[in-house]
Image (cartoon, rainbow, N blue to C red; front, top):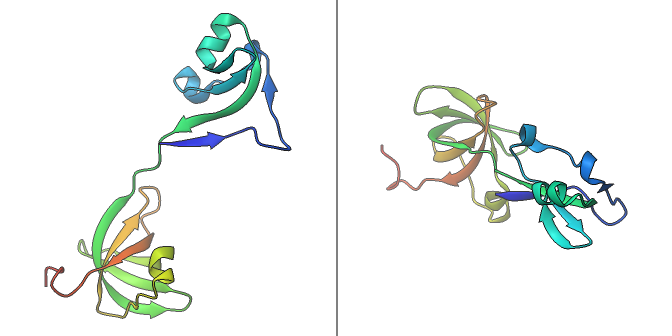
Amino acid sequence: MILKRISRPGLRIYSNYQRIPKILGGMGIVILSTSRGIMTDREARLEKIGGEILGFPRMKEQKLIHEGLITDSLPNGMFRVRLDNEDLILGYISGRIRRSFIRILPRDRVKIEMSRYDSTRGRIIYRLRKKDSND
């Protein structure tokens, strides 16, 4: 879970108790800094206190992790990857792999992280060693 910060130095957002935003139709939580301390939106509405909106917690998007085989190497750290379920996607290397200078070549097996919203692209997060792969 991460905290999405709304108010920051140079851009303070204040709200009275009637105009505190509702997150997820009232199901989410907004964190406020009030004259009585830090409190949630529900507590501030009950006590009829406004304040500075600090942010709201939200869940990180769950990523799908697949294994695949690099088929083509493209420019700028991009690769064509054939997943185990025979889908062909475009993969790019993660920052950790780029910083560690891990070399990825065609015919390498990799773990790739995909968003559930875009099944055509993914981030290569791990290069499997020969003994790690199922081949």
